[in-house]
Image (cartoon, rainbow, N blue to C red):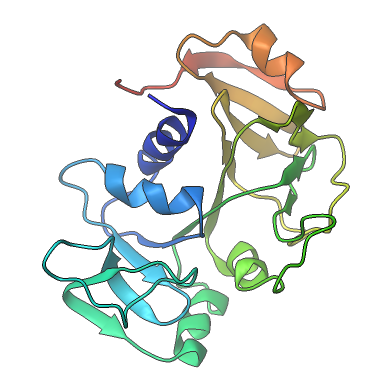
Length: 217
């Protein structure tokens, strides 16, 4: 399986029955495909819908998009509303989980995910509100990019929020930020601890109950 699918499958295991979940643009949108059978998760998009899914053949509607402009479908019972109400849900602490992509996460568990140096960006979007307002924040990203570690001692890019995220899932590992530092909880299938450490830009604490990701091929 490819790296993005691995990450999405592992993140999906974190979603519980009845959760209200926001998926960031890009890689996080894949998570909806892999929710375990029997778990009913409600997906929200900050542009104003609860109860969305990926495009369903025969139910396409080009007037329905997620916050990134990708087409979606509304499931039976879905609700739509304006952005003010949508951000009220987020800022009011009613969102159980948000899954966001990342450019960097530092040793303190702080996320930088909105500005790419040298590129025009439209702004932070809803990321600042999501990291601050969601009850649980999961970062889904590749462990390194172009040979550079994305988990670093200190973020060189502008922070999205000073709040510590709850979990980081990469193609190599599952890492939990804690008061003591970043704890390596799981390694990807076939990946060694040494490989994770070699691709990480700061010290990791090895969990005593370290295991392999519970992912089926």
